[in-house]
Image (cartoon, rainbow, N blue to C red):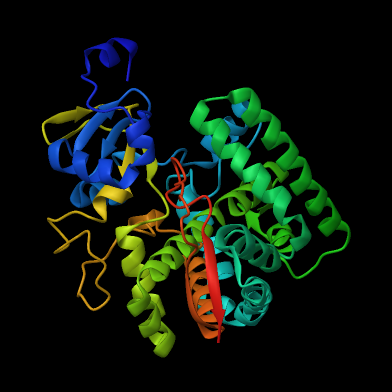
Length: 400
């Protein structure tokens, strides 16, 4: 959108308003009802309805994720000094090629083989917080577990999990603030860390994704270092934060609903269904962006090539046009498919891993407790865009 177009475009809402920051779910509901296709200076266009988010997710001809050909990727690397996040920020044909290459690494078969190793971590962390009697469930459980589990899957040193968390947080903060200097600084450190691992695997391959990527080819040639770095940085960035938020959100709702908690403890087979329904109502991620390639009209608003569009999952997953009693958590209700993991060609690559970790984390904490609840008289603080969860969850655990 040109500067002239921006000046003519009415501003419908301000996602940086303090109320909007502190009440992301409520504001998403309000905007979906009064202005489902809304413009703001910070985000550009935001789509709040289920049907519009599905359309933007599936209509890849009009809504772009980034670059789509080998030549465009190389031009991006030349201009930016780094590869785009692969495959997240790719369009087809490049996106399809890289998804076909990477999907087997997150297959159900591989997840089944990996589950015992991941569960071992969850058991250790769960035992630690339950033995204390009270603990911050975020800092001591939902935060360390997914990133340590991811490191195990990737064959990386799980002791570096705090460093990876720090880089992820700094990266997100820099992007939200538009601080390109901070972003460049943290990504330089991140890329150097990744390349140290890649160089070590070239000398001594191991059974991990870094060694596996070194064996892959595109157009008969090995992947270059920039491409490998783009893939690994995305996995290290996107492969744990939303899972942390998901575990936190489900634990919070179980802590305030003892009946549902007891039901899942008595019948663990309900955990996946209950988790998905809780996350439909209180999801871990506010939005994902797209970039217009074609002119599209939605709800009387004209979206032009070059415009940024955000798919607001918090609003879409609570849309009364699709979900009856949309703000209520009902694990017995027959629901339409939610959009927690996205839909269309860009459905979450790491979804099998995230679902495994979410299920295992809840199975182990429920198995080892008679109950858990929030500590008395605590004031909870929510995360801010782009995440939607709690910064801390002080809880009391009664051992089984």
